[in-house]
Length: 259
Image (cartoon, rainbow, N blue to C red):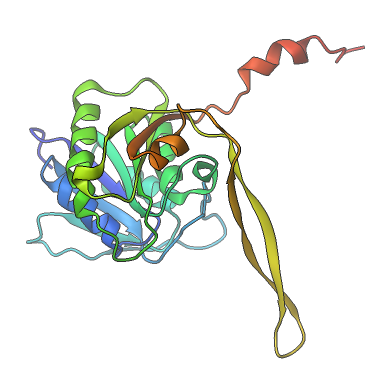
């Protein structure tokens, strides 16, 4: 691993063979030295899950002659980051990028996202990190149209760094390159999933359920990630992993806790 190029760790939650991560590898290979550690199968909506009651396996899938070192992992996206940092990399990477996810991770989806949880785990390790997602769930989505923006955002982060304990959640609208209006720094929209379960029965008469639902945006602000995506912009949301509700501490301290 050379020191004249930034060392970039790549992971995702759609699996190591997903077109999105292949596009990300292509862009990052133009910027630095790349190591890939990604799940061996789709791990979408795993959130920040880690493997504690099962064994974990790593398989080196790249050849010695390949320019990019690649491993598949039997675990979650967060497992991938942990194993990369502790078992594979000789030094802490200069950047971790996760994605490009097939589908948006805007608004409340950041909580469930394996893509973003991998980036957050890197942030916890003190590594600057970015999660990239495209608002297109098609396996054959057009990732070429956003590659130049991925490169721009990545080089900016490498040059300027990120605020302490902050990672970036980047979402792209489903548009051609020349249709994208620009990049907006946003806040996370106050939106949620109104969920329902489709109840069915097996031939043996046992009940089972499929999760379904509708995404509802209750936020009318024009400074949100949802607004940006709906209006042709790339949304960039700075995300922190300190979940303390600091605004609530004063009120809670006024309660009679010790009486």
